[in-house]
Length: 318
Image (cartoon, rainbow, N blue to C red; front, side, top):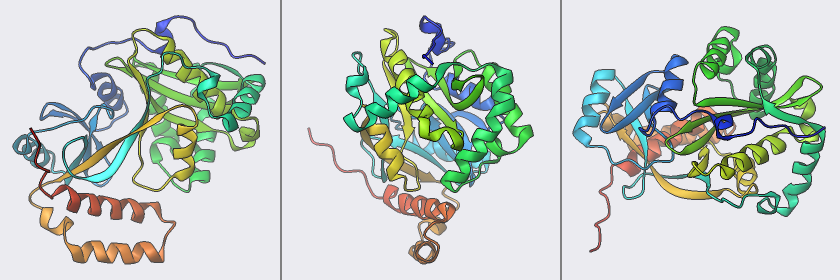
């Protein structure tokens, strides 16, 4: 089979706003996520009563007072945002800004997988009925492989709401790798502020040997890089849980890892508790006892990041 694309820039979604983060925030709001505009940017709620800034690739420097006001009004524990000049948890994001993107940009060990995926699957935008009907199985397979569970991708009602949000958002497009009408993998993208964000990617376990993910990653990246209106492609931020295989996968597709501090700003009402060395020590002991539990790993990362973020920023040299 061959890869198929809808030609033209609109295949990557329509740019509906010039304000960075607004398209992503709108998509998340349709999914039922908590969305707040405060301290100069957009924020979305995540588990644990925390908020994250969007878009993910844009460093932020929010005013502490405004941020505290937002956290109090939302009864949130804290907020997480990327920074290039403030201390925090070592982190970063994966970006590609190459206008000459081609198979030559892919690591030599990955090229054969890409070519096999392109031969085995037809890659095109996914119809709403296809994603709704077939996507849930891909979600279940992927989360099982990764040892995690997200109800938005596992519960039929919430999955239906997410699918409806995809097709209700002009800036969002879902691409899929198909074999005779069977969806083997999908990738949900969002166009925002001159960037394409690769947001969610899921695949069917039975089809992995034919490399549908490789075909999708390569072709969506290539399509974005060929669009003169696109500044860059973001393949997400580093996870709070360890994922060395995923890190290597993204780098081998020609993405670079931009180091950023992940600042965790805490609600002043609970800051002392979260920065407690006693609490962090207890969680670290629990982590050693249950090394594969991603929830404990993420909690340890949050507590560590909160302590690091409380340190004074280094003095700027003139």
